[in-house]
Image (cartoon, rainbow, N blue to C red; front, side, top):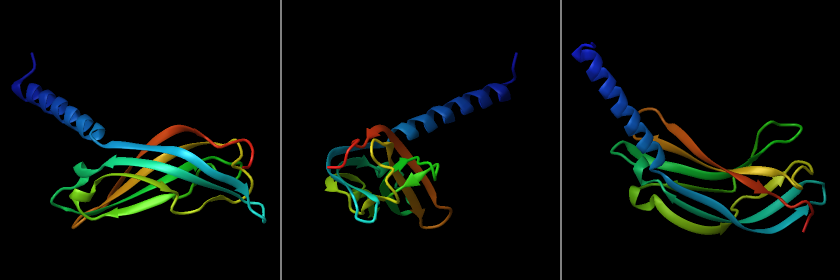
Length: 157
């Protein structure tokens, strides 16, 4: 039989694992593309896309007594022959207080989605919501949620 110490350790480890799992799933985040407004080739050869995004997030659980602010941004991530990871920030926000951490917005991309080259036609990509928690004191930490299954058109429009 195991001693009391082994049993207490197993119970504590199990409880902390369940708590960590619950914390990981408590963020309510949905980012989707409502419309591809236009997809064109610029005069100097780069591809450019304009998207309408629907961003729904509840980041209130990130705020504690030590949280100064949260920086959040949405970026498409895709691969090309030159780079294994390409990221372009489409939208960002600084969330200063817990009361502002639950939001729903519908917006065209705040920043231009341009690929250096003509690699975006028919490209599969992930839409990723990143956030960085900036504490009043201590180490900053970051996390993200990746939403896959997006594809750009095969032709310009």
